[in-house]
Image (cartoon, rainbow, N blue to C red; front, top):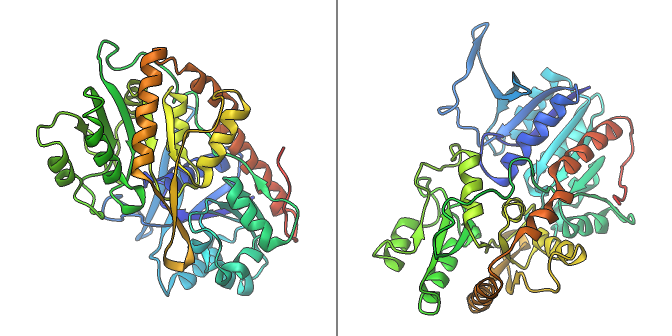
Length: 409
């Protein structure tokens, strides 16, 4: 089967970029002929190959010791994107389109489904960040031939528009062969270590956590915060300046020692080591579509404190159901704010964040911090289950001409 994926570049180190990468690899391993249309692909950073006088880009990776590559067609977002995509589809003639992202990313699919011949099937991997779905996008949703949601809130939004009893949902999970508990970087330290993932963007809310940690030093003198971030990329803040204001002596806030950017990260083994050295993982993000960082932190034994939104709510429910925690309490209280497009952002209450971090500190100090239950919990949610669902739905959707929407046990 010929498949075209559409989404943010798989080289981009964001949750959707990494998810796109995993989906591409899985579809290729399934034996399909795969190509990809991508945005945010830096053509000055990733050099093309020359074929018959034409420049061609590829996504290259290693599978079972063998080099593999998938043709990539970069495009710019904007008024002309439908034309570019239409021309690329004419060139590749796919049987199925697989998109990864939010409904707002794929408004052009309405035109593609309406005018492109022969008829294409569209499989949407829905990582919704703009919720609730605005009525302007309902026609786009109805054009989908199958939907795999990454959290229950996304599933509920799709159900409202489809008017069907259920839609397919699967947690993204984590690669437990990579992210797991190991010997920490330094098991002799007396620090209370907090870690967070945060792009240099307002929606990831890193400055709030940095300020909360600075205030907590009065009650927890040995507190330390590691912000895994891309301070060298342009963003909404100068995080280095925020750090200098809050931690002028460079005593308790750390950034990556190596370059981390949207296209360049540290080796996974180093990231796993940092997570294993942390006591608590805090995510103050204002949206949560996949909670990829939280899943990785749990697999490495971190106690989670997560903003009360999206897929984070699913994690708390699953932790309680599996007995990894006894009651609610890992979600940080949020205030809902309507933003552009009438979508909701969830702003963490810094006072509640401070109280919950202090509570976890006292609990870990009392119980000596045995967090192995979190690592054991994630085994049931290995990413292989999500990717298996992608494989099954890709084949099933390509064979039908009507909308598919089924419940996952």
